[in-house]
Length: 369
Image (cartoon, rainbow, N blue to C red; front, side, top):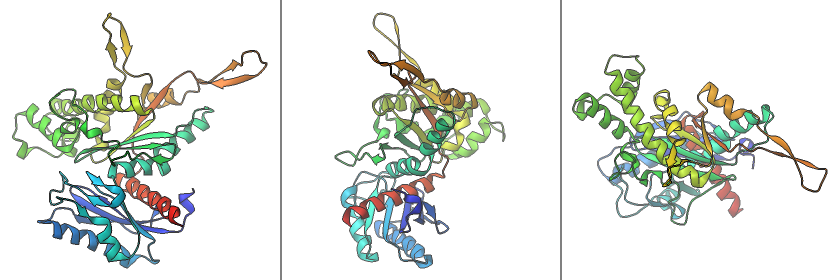
């Protein structure tokens, strides 16, 4: 389907732990200025009223009637039925909240809800990293075309979503791509999210500098310290993001071994990639030691840092060869190099989520036509 030419309008929401970002999409493009409202409220009713108000504000500035509402919301949830479960980052949600039915009653249009990591990945697969990479490969004369993508977000939490051959992979319990539940390599008694998150970055920096975490700088400021842009303990800042890189790289190597596709990183911490991405990729490409003393590649595939000029060049290198078809005069093309790329989002994360939500809604609407 060509989402970039579809004229239907979908109202969207990127629901984070800090802010709710409301928008509207038509033909893969935002057609309103995003409306940002705070996600924090004293109780459930207050939060629900904020969600209703955000969509009301978007509706009031649309030139045409919206065809649907589609948005991301954190899990656990029964996304198919639009029921939100007990949330960690939004503690007011407890016991099952029928968000889909509430909004359908208020706005009288279909409502679709999905995981933020899933919709982020879907947006990147449709209009972000995946088509960009495939176009670059084609320009270089390569024969490879990537159809699988794992989108992860580094922010308030550590989320993930899987797209395979153009389709979102949901799982039977709406729980696929939950990379946050993998074991933490450096602190095995904890999950990876304890390190790959805003709180994880601040915890490590506070530990390395000996300050109380309550007075810890923001992750953006820690990044600026690490880059030498502002004063502070540069070594501690760099070590902070190196620790994130090791834990994230280990979890991504475990995940992509099963999925095999492009990895794209978004979220509030993604902008700090100059301090962590290469080390993350190096961690993915590490070796195992076998019981007989040999070395075994951590993955069957090689990961390349696509934000690095040389890494991108190596990834795009045309390594295909012609091989003979046995007992025939024919030849076929074959690329013996198994490779994936790791990069940061070339879309704003909220925009990627919105595009993913838009495409998901159109697919669901077409099923009912």
